[in-house]
Image 1 (cartoon, rainbow, N blue to C red):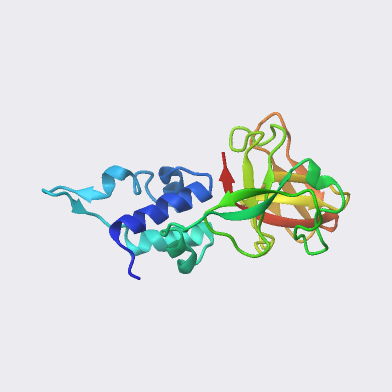
Image 2: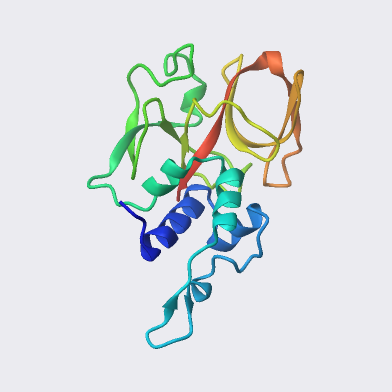
Length: 210
């Protein structure tokens, strides 16, 4: 089904929320002018106002910056008939044994549920504890994680689980074959460099529910 003007902009707004950004923040991440996706830019003059569409170039840059497919973007334009439910676990609790299998997928008892408009197999959510990522993520916020999104790069916000069971939400400041440097949004917490051999798994944060 073709995407209407309203659905295209709805997908942009939903994608921004999924990334924990405003529409302006999404535009900046894509290397666009901060006002590119402002509501005031979505209609031009006229009676009735003339719809303005985001350019193909701007949408391509957004898809590249957020690393989603055109199909996933189209899904964001649609309302799910019923919210999907994903497994939910407290981030501090995630450090204990028995909640993840060897592939980093949720297993065992003790999981609750959180809602997301659309789900995919293997995705789960974690509840933030602590203040290292304030003000981006606050205690009680729920982040959606996809173990399939294990190819990460500098600037990604990720959940990292270490070999000794520590599980944390961080931002990747630097990464190479030997180490990964993890940063916090809260300046009270210094960066931390972890040997890659000590990383059990890393997965990108796809969505935050606040």
